[in-house]
Length: 253
Ligand SMILES: C[S@@+](CC[C@H](N)C(=O)[O-])C[C@H]1O[C@@H](n2cnc3c(N)ncnc32)[C@H](O)[C@@H]1O
Image (cartoon, rainbow, N blue to C red):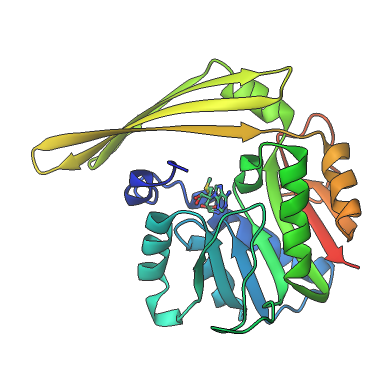
């Protein structure tokens, strides 16, 4: 996979980690609503680790998983004092062992995944395998909280839209398109990173797949989860077809 390589070096400078920082206070409300008292957690597709830092502040011993070595390198630097285990693994199937040469799967009280990360699963089968892998890594009655972009979000925010921005160290242009029939979005991202007096250009192409709310719920149930909340993200209103982002709160049976 050739995404989130050099992007990792500018991700936080572009404030791309802001969403996950916003998700943690929202999770705090979710913990209160469902009396969730997690001691251990795994942030799936943790990126640069900003959510891990915030979740650690709530007293949860966090671990992180991501496919990108460069995203994890940023996360490692950020979480150095916290001694957070970081795993370079790829969804949909992953297995974390509790120590070297062990055959025991590590299990957590909580798994989180923020900012469209699960939209990177491009088929229902891969989404299902990811949910099943999460299920295996949860303790009994453990919780899984994640957000995803909806078909409406990809159609409205991505289709034929160009986004551009700049600050003192990075400039970017993202050209997006959406295949409504396939519910698949593509983002052609171009970055310019300041290097002394010059700017280094690099490009990445990202694909996100949207799923109907009912499809996500069906796959969650078949993967062994009980759906406790399926919200219009950041609120406790039920997600609808007009939602741009859903937040699922599910528990291992
Ligand atoms: C939009 S970023 C979100 C990062 C972080 N959760 C945040 O909120 O800032 C998506 C992340 O998913 C990771 N990712 C994408 N596909 C993946 C896969 N198949 N396995 C593991 N990680 C993946 C990327 O490397 C990237 O760090």
